[in-house]
Length: 506
Image 1 (tube, one colour):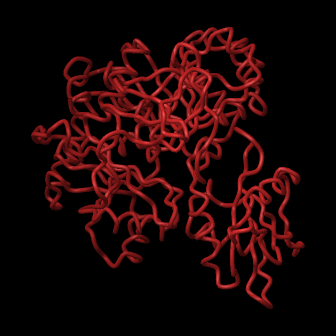
Image 2: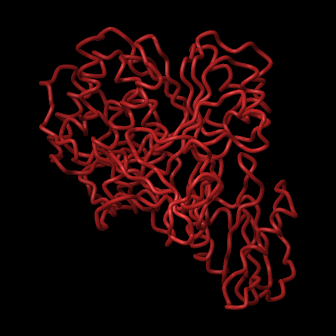
Image 3: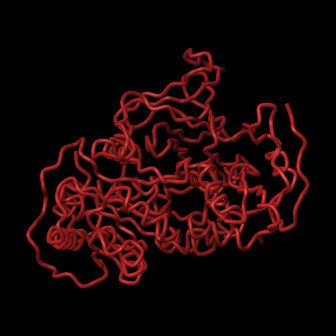
């Protein structure tokens, strides 16, 4: 029931088969196995023991995957940090999870050590490691922590979602079976390793002795090069946010070439897929189209295979039925269980539900997703939208309060509110900023300030300077009014001038 056992087993069965491919080469299963043991020995020498957390902060590479495996073999948990994460935010994660060790490349580790004050210890995984080491496989329970994924937090502080081996394996085993994964498969890993989509890419491949191709971060939204990679690497299973596929269609020429004969499954998650683009994709390829749904706290908890009837709708495809052994239902506002045709908040119970947030009380019982869904005949679900201020932008989960906190930290900002403009894969973040009296912060200065605290996908696309924020009758920010303003002015430029305020609404 452990994640690292998948690689150990695959190395025994398929030692010479390619396991992980990256910009710097291919690592066979036997090589991955040996490298993981060698790195585990070095980590153990650095004091890592069962139950510890090890931060991995580096660009995607086979070496990084080996480091993840090494952590698991020690009975510890890895904490991936996206390489684009600003230094201050990354070190906040290190502190929050009380990391025993930080793994990365030399330059990044040097900058981090200067900021962090020299602790915890650091390990440069790009350095040469002796190829021979004793096998490492510490006893680990199914409910022990495997990894922690940090997501956007409402207070400006990231929250660590704790995933056990059981949580991850319930999803991975389901996904591998649903895809009927085989050793000849070639999975594309588009998502960053700090995001939950990557769990399927890596471990569904490892469970079947298949290969996973790590898409370099700089190519994530380079549509033409992604299309080239899809063909050149003979990808058979592609999994990404819909916005990546939409960009490949719109600007990458995806539909101008016949679909690769190897491609047999196209999976997408993270945001609704615009139905017009989904129709084009369905006409282009005979591959299975699978819509996966679930917050990081549950990984994937429902799924739906797109059928011809779905393409006749005027809304995105359903998010479908429960997956991974979970039970999913919707609760109406009055507290009753929603039936066919009714809407309610989705709740999830089952083996994929997280252990809890790091440093907080354990998760007990069902998890309320905060998403509103409509129950369809037969028990499947349609996604309706978010219950709170958690939003999805280009597949990334963003807590608007997190973006607001970063802007409000600027010395020239008195107040800030952020809303989402647009829909689906064309959504953007729009910020309304009230400056301190007598100050006029520039848009570029505000974006630069945000970039020091937030990952790129959380930086507001447009920033308005306003005299005041609109208010409701009870004094709260009128987000509906801000949303109407955002939809009225499509993204495409940056607003630097001061704009008029709004009257109070009731």
